[in-house]
Length: 446
Ligand SMILES: Cc1ncc(COP(=O)(O)O)c(C=O)c1O
Image 1 (tube, rainbow, N blue to C red):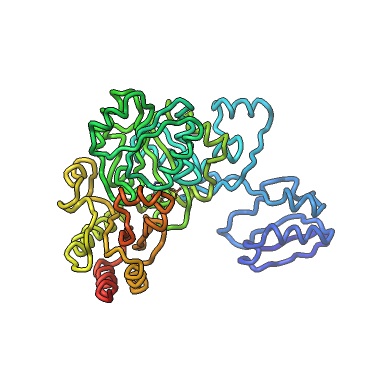
Image 2: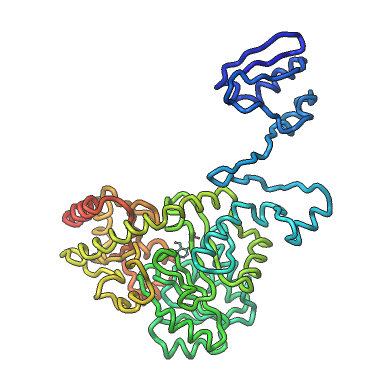
């Protein structure tokens, strides 16, 4: 790359270096007081340098240049991967453009909290995966749930929830009682009580496969019951992912997922989303935007990238999980295994109707309820780590009594059977034999 300066001097840079540092190189040259007359591309194939901003050449003040100098023209062709729109603030040419963007006449971004193209890409993807009209991406699974509760419920509302929900979901619903919300928690197969509690309720909250006991609700039957009572049904599909279940096809009105888990799949992002009909999603979007419950462009981008491999990851992980469930069920040190694919599971027949492509990659098992024994088991494991999340490519264990469900009262935990020996396993995509050997050697040391 050759610079022709007004002194008549030609300055030559190594091509790789100048390509990498073009903007810096030019600003340094300008600082010396020299004017660049022209820039020549030393190669045949390299596109001619285009500053993307004519005034760059006359900007002499470093303070202005450092703020305005990093310009580039929008390429006429398209990147394969959607760029990350890492900007909170967006410009408008005039007030007419502001109106056009606000009204949706022109595609545009109002402000980072209202969502960028990265938010829209993830929301469209999530909605399509669930055959829904619209979606909203939020900062986490819990913010997606909170936005849904705050957007659709009011002080007078009654919520009926499965008693088998993720601990934080139950906690949020309990918290909302401070604002007047009425809450009833019900065992999912107690249809008589469910019917009674649903009278006058606005919302029924279920998990496709519950955390941590893997209870599978009869979605078609419960959705019909809720609709007859005038309630909408929100289903947390985090454990199943759209690969194993699309709750909207079983009658659910809103599907929510912690995308932190299987959808993103690599334990490196916190994000959540809800999807459903426009009529239900728009009030949720308003709350999410106003209260700042939204995600950010980079996390949305990571989530879209992770979703690309969802199907292959889930195929492998759920087939591993089915094998490990059988292996653990036959082990003398294991008291009980909870996996919807086992005929011994109380919801096995329901799972056959509600889940597809197998029974998902989550299982739970019970050892003797001794903290010391559990610690020995956990310390004895190699690949399989204790980690208080799920849905990554690696196999992990969690202990609900000391983590997800630690804030429930001992009585509530007891009712759910979450004693000290209860472990939940999120099965990953590692080699099955390595996982079996890891479990075998840790169990045999007990
Ligand atoms: C079933 C379920 N729903 C919701 C959440 C909350 O998701 P997040 O941690 O992304 O807020 C979790 C988290 O573990 C979960 O397991």
